[in-house]
Amino acid sequence: MTTAPAVSPPAPAQARACLIRLGNALYAAEVRFAREVVVFDEYTQVPLAPPHLIGVANLRGRLVPLVDLRPLLGLEPARATRDAKALVVERDQLTAAFLIDDVVGLEPLERVTAPDPDEGEFIAGRLERSAGAAVLLDVSRILTALGGASPAPAGGS
Image (tube, rainbow, N blue to C red; front, side, top):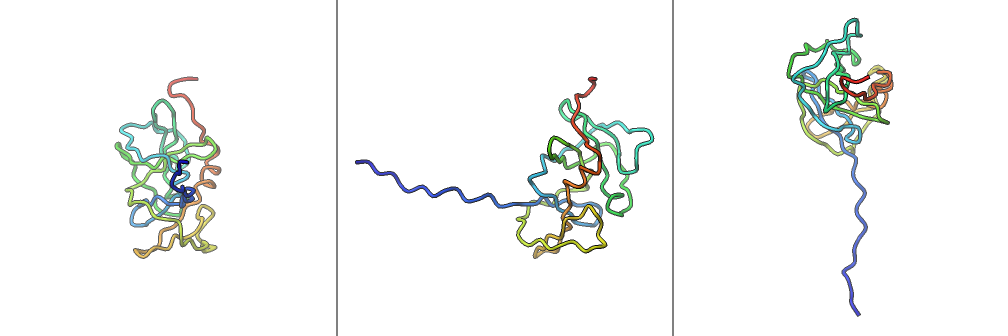
């Protein structure tokens, strides 16, 4: 008779957040929505677009909106430049690239507190950390508010 060592079931994956910096403020986005961080060498500005829409960029053949979250969060708009760094997020095939200043790292979503009522509709809570709290973004609500930034073929119809 052959015996095999007992195999314990895999531990459930712990939810994590991607910490990003917008100006001097620290924000977090759930990793389940984050796809990648990219630097767009080029993007196209959209005439008459709302202040939060910087433009659209080609991401490996898909056009994605480049969004400045600052106006949506009550902050001063960023000055978008070439070589714009962005966190690409996706939910239910809705994709957008959030303009960021930097990626700080990953953090477990262990101690999340409810948002203050005056923090706005795009805040899901506060991620409490030993190094200071980060504001947890409601990525799902932001994407919904953007009106379905669905992927489209670049240069196609």
